[in-house]
Structures are given as C-alpha cells and as structure tokens.
Image (tube, rainbow, N blue to C red; front, side, top):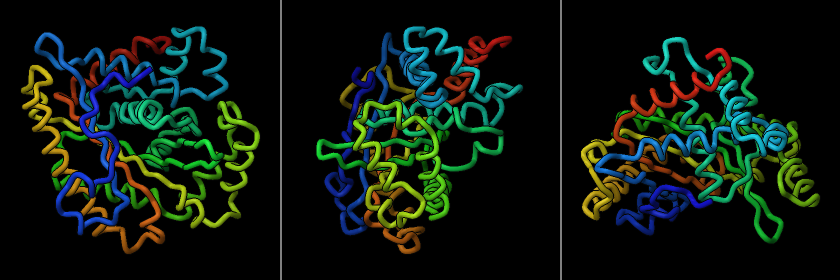
Length: 310
C-alpha cells in the first residue's frame, strides 16, 4: 500500500534544493511528509491508524508476524504487550517514545521499500535498553544482489529550532561509534528475522557474511544509510485547515531552512571526527504535527485498551 501521507519533498539530495551548497558534503538528503486535513481538522485518525498499522513490524518478531498475519486483532494485542506503557500515562515526559520508532518503521517500508532486520521494540529486554542503539534497523536490496544497511534515529519534539538540534546530532554521533555499529551488526546476524524475509539464499548469505564481526567497519559504512525522523509540533500545521498551496509552500520553505541548519550543525560537530563520514548517506525526514500531547494521549489510550488487563 502507498503511504497515506503527502510527500512534499521526495527523498533528494539537499544540495539540489538549497542555495548554500558549499556548506555541505553531498551525502545529505531530505524527505518531507505531511498529513492531510478533513472537515477543517488535521487527520489525527489517519495518523493513529498508520501507527497501529505498523506497530507489529517493530514490536513483534518476523516469526510472530507470520504466525498472526491472518489474525489482525491478535497481532495488535500481542504488539501492544511489548509497548512500554508508563503508569503516569501521556503526562510522563518519556511516554510515547516508541511512537516515533513505529512511524519510522512504517516510513522505511513505504518510502524506501526496506525490510525490517531487527524489530527493535521486540528485542528490548529492559527499561535501560530504551536509550541504547539505533531506533530502527533495516536492509534494502537491489536487482544486482547488493544491499544497504539502514540504522535510524527518531525524535518527537515540541519544536525543531536550533536549541534542539545538538541533541539529535549527539544521538547520530553515538550511533556511528564503531563499537555500537559492530553491536548492531552482531544483533542482525544473531536474530532470525532476516531468515524470515523474502530474500533469496544468496542474498541472505551475503548480508550475513559482510555483517560478521571480523569485517572492517569501513566496509559497513560504505553501505550505511542513517534515516533521522523528526516528528515535530508545528504552529503552521496547528493553524491550518486544509492542505492549501500556501500551507504546503510554507512547510517546504521552513523545512528546507531547518534541514540546512541541522546538517550544518551535524557537519560542524562530527564530520571531522567520524571516520569515513562522507561515504555514509544521511536522510533527514521531517513530519509536522499540530499537537504532540494529543497524539501521545491517543496512542496511550489505544495501547492501554489493547493490553490485557489494561
């Protein structure tokens, strides 16, 4: 199924859509998505449906998804069991952190045709694991049998002004640490999800052989893509009543400016300290929403209703 959201900027090189091209390394890309409106209101229902349509991809293993594929309600209930639902609900500052991860998994599937290599929510074993490693782990393949590794970050902010950008950069820098990259590749080869995907034997063997721990991380980086999803509360979106040309033009202009600011901050902070930085491809994904707390509250309410004894 196609993604239900509007794509304002289809994943493209930032240097193709901004004027200050000399400030960048040529490995920065931008994807801009927006939700639709109905009856003068932002479509919260469509956004929540997208979250719950994709929750199983990151909360259940490939084996569980296969077992439950003909039982959609059972699949939702099993997925909800894996979610971290805090006692204080959506008022907790950490509540709904997984929501961004779920949206990123959906975007990876729908916009990049990527296979889930590690369902991260499923494999997190304790509360401390929520701050560790990539927020999404995917594989893409091509007709020549080559593959790319995608390790993603997702954030959900009240705003994406300059004050928030260093935190995103720090998360990306941590993700690119050699030991953490090796840990992620070890997890991929150590779980069975790749074996359950629609790949031929030769593709699976190639992926696993290259992701083995004795392979240089330099070879991994040449195949590495880093999608960075920033769901962000947006005053323009909160005031809008329809996807008018004026609204969409405002979002495009604002997000181009924010993408430039983000990548300049990232380059300044880590371009010279991360070996092989220029062979890695970074995809900034921007998605504005009108009200973060309302989205979290709706997500929490649904999760509680689905969880046994919720």
